[in-house]
Image (tube, rainbow, N blue to C red; front, top):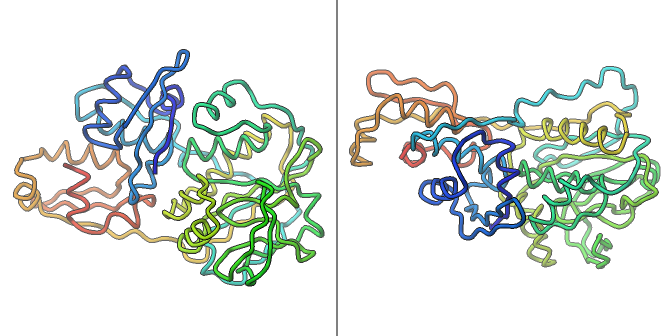
Length: 364
């Protein structure tokens, strides 16, 4: 998939003296390819190809992480900052209200986190947010909806907001659609559903979301919304892809979801989004955090022998460089003993790194 990011947004996470051309060169030689770029005002927009197995690079932060690792190997000083994984999680101990969300089939949902906010004030977004969205081909709508799109662009995990007061008795069920059901989505299109689709039904039997693809009109946030439900989910990628292709809605969210984004990221994105909601709308948390995660992902150590790596690559790579590369790419528990390297892939590469060849590719 192709994404557009601005250099300004990249430098929120990448502290370096490298200039624009050096960043473009570094990425194109060793990382996600910058296919095109153009100047707009005092910013530069990069058009970048994020390959299918590297959904972790389909965001500004993901590109910054790879760029940081590459620049350091080119002896250009660089540092990765503001990692979402370092975000302080939401403290909900003073909240009494609990979200009533039911998920009968755990095969449909990898992880689902949610919270509610009250007394939000809907208005236009800050100028910087509007510029970020416009430069990434996303249309600014209002301060609440724009937060969800900004989070997707910056961190590669889609989120969604609902008008809580439009959700009947505010009891939700995430389930398979029944063949023949219909939802009118936010683009004012009526969509006939199949049983492979994932939907959210409110307490009155109405479908309010076509999960992972597009929200429904029933609980749409508008200028009158005050109380909202904010969700940061990860769905079964096969279902999302089937739905998106069948009804021909290739949204940014669906393209990300069908490639398995990191479920370990969801509570951090919920926390980041919650702070943005508080700062930009004046709303405040009104519920306990809902976190459904039936089968946490597990990463397994990957091992390779450095003599094999030398023969495979044709070059001798110093142990210190190997360690630095892997650390910068998020690998942990890195050990090198008797020329044998062992390390643990990060959660956002759990489905991508399992063989010694995978590890060798990262290092090389």
